[in-house]
Image 1 (cartoon, rainbow, N blue to C red):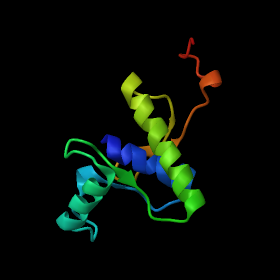
Image 2: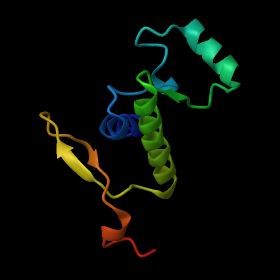
Image 3: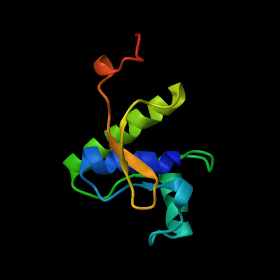
Image 4: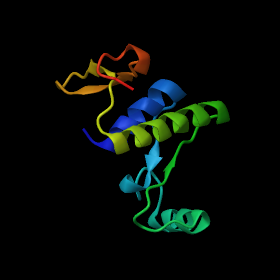
Length: 108
């Protein structure tokens, strides 16, 4: 499973959005290389930096990006606890977080 896919699944679940755009997959999805360069200049990022954005209504964008940021923070600690749902091809996708106070493996 790729981290970007995990982030997109969380954004879809918590933000009620169709997905996310992240610079690891761009240019694509109708976004040109020139537009990507303009975005990087506007945000003052380097090519090594990953930028994530969402195209939806403000409330959904905020919720989706919060989910992305939370997953990014969790990635720095390791694989997070969570509930997975099955896909038709035998893989799984993000379904929901397991509350930390209910995780038997969480000792903090």
